[in-house]
Length: 171
Image (cartoon, rainbow, N blue to C red; front, top):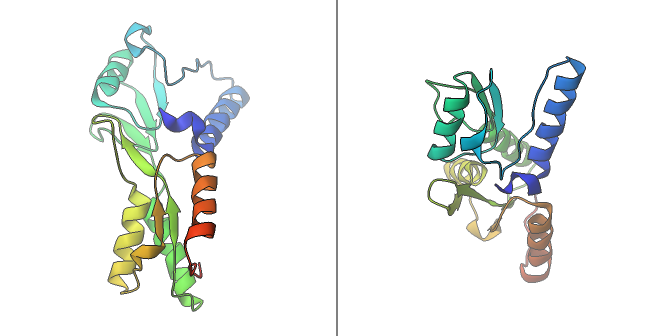
């Protein structure tokens, strides 16, 4: 899993650990390379990030009481906590448009589909494209996505945009 390279997921992990400690919750932390098939049953789990179908079945075998953070692999079986990324993107674009900015860019990574092993457009990019298309403001030349969600990749994309793309978007 690429989550370890992602500040967002590291922050979630840190906050979960902090809350568990503050509330005297006994927990065991497993990383992305953990062999889920060899874990003992547990009372419940919190799974952060995206998981393929095999991993989800293994987690379900550990405990029927699971919460997924940032994904919702089976809403009939598990609870989940997810940010409204589409709403956040739409709010940001609306703010830009309301302030007279018309040339709006997007920098992002790609979503790794853990079942197929392929990279796909992330929901934020899809929301960006859809919202600006509906506003008749989409300028695809200002959409910059490649690679993973990492600080390194974001920096690389930023440098690439600054050196190879003129004119730059207003926002």
